Length: 282
Image 1 (cartoon, rainbow, N blue to C red):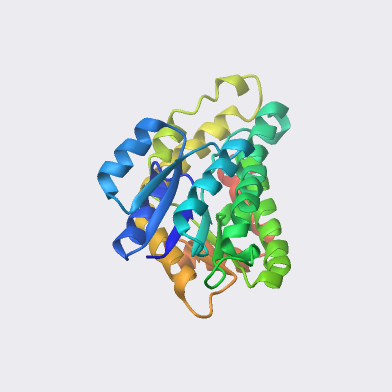
Image 2: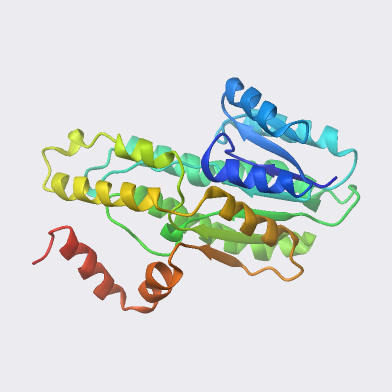
């Protein structure tokens, strides 16, 4: 049985990826931060789910988890690593506390490199292991290619993750390890319940607060109409198994309207449309 490590599997996209991989005969080592989530998922998915308890920013625990996985691979390579864990910290960048910005970067960027470094030997950098090199999947977003107001720190982290992935894809050719980016748009997950509850009162004194509330409402409503998380799991499965994977897979509902056309239009035109909708321009 082939094995895949997936980070951030307690809910949402990570849960959907885990479900699809297990249904297709893979063993999933899934990371969570809480013991109760590990127990719940183990009960839900059965013996082919192996929980790993760590925060992606904790180097010691991440490397301990990699040793745990190595022990269970019995000298074989890991089939894949899916860097999915991440958070979104909303705020207008002009007023965002720097410690919150650092937290966003630490989780969505530095944490991804911590996990990658810990598991790269199992993907094939350790040439003593048997089997073909595995694949590294980095979970980006539409925000990895275009900006949006009030989620600037998240956008920054995803742009940076895409750049890191581009470099890793070249560097890891030495070991035959491929690096693939998945860029979801709106996905219907519990994150939108959290987004609806995000506290914007700290920006009450700024000129952004009304526009931020309007944008928050739009994002929550749009997100709840998004793709099921299992759809992302199906794309991850394809990226892990196809003989000629693309370097990047956008997975966006209403692809023409929400991805293709906006990416073809001049950026300043799109910026003005967004700004007008938020009341920044008449």
